Length: 407
Length: 168
Image: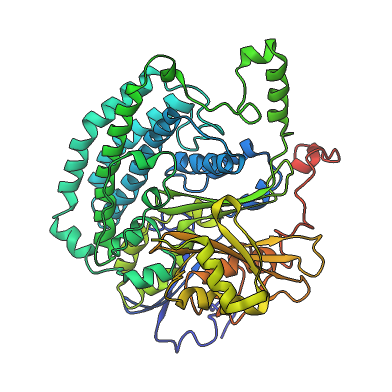
């Protein structure tokens, strides 16, 4: 063999299967993750996932940061629904500190979290469509994700990595434009969602591509630690919003859609139905927010001076405000010792925060329970023996977000 | 309904007696500690017992306590009984020189990557794990970065000049 020959690894000529690297930068992975597939023709013999390409050591970084600065880290977990992560983090801190938030704050949070859920599901479902060859739906619903982002913008100034809210509530009250945009969304979105549904739900091509592929039984799903829409698609009606209500979710009426087969089609359907439920929750929350009158209608945060940044005017004129301002900015507030686990229903499952404080100014240990990190390990079982093209659909319908996978 | 922390505690003490310790209820979640040789027995008991039914592993995390001589590393399990909607947390401590703990992968498939992550960051050796290798960090790494002996960079250090950023 001359120098010019490509040196193949030992035994690779005799091998009857093909190795295919799907990722880390492949249009179908929608994020940086790698699947090393062993293919027999087009059938998948085995899969090995490699992750960690955008690991940013958030848990380590959090050990040196005061609470308020950790919010920005949570943004970058599931960046399709950052506000849910932000609120989850604030709820964790509030649980540890024993802060009770006013009802209006809870309802405003619910509005934002459900908007985030819609934008998350919207991306996932339309991407499933894209991978099945239907680009139109994806482009069409982007307008409404844009509207959701505009609402975020009115509330907090940012669009994608929102860093929204503070411990105890929001940094400012929702302005009228925000409410107008929410109204616009409530008015226009149902029609769009219906149209989106019409494109896919009974579409023959879509059904045949998704039904029966990537299926998992309820038992296996539980054993794999599935949560969120993926677990519900397998038929288990577990939803953190109902089982351990936070942020006054117990005040709302909504259904938990469940599937039966746990395949790609059911996952898609569950997300679709959840968007309708989210819409109804936003409507209810919006009504409840409108019912606050007088001084109650201006409440947008709890009274936690040690953690809630005071108004700038007070900082210049009042001693206490100045002290708290300084302590919060410099991160010099001692956090009470304790350990707490708080979960919220994120866009793709139970997003948990396990927070140990030893009484210092930063967390002693902070662990994020990232739902997609946990359920991605089932990918091999989901795809074994299936066609390569089905594996692609399975990957997108699991709603894998690289930022959350790698933390 | 009706599975309370008292009942769980009682069932566990009936079964394991004095071996379990440190029963607490921080923020309402029953927390206890088991000797590390017993972790699988406790997990199995919690899983199989007809009353307890803790059949969902929510989370598995490592913690490093460098000051705790002889029990520096902790592995914290969060389990969930979805029927009665009760969560518990239980901890296993090990010393840092022989950080061997039995794997829970036989019971929960979900434990696979969570244990790999804990190995990756804390160096806990899960005995019997089918594929115990690094997951988020590079394979060549020869230390366990979440341990407390690796502090984050001191943000007040002054020896950094423009040259370090290629702007010299």
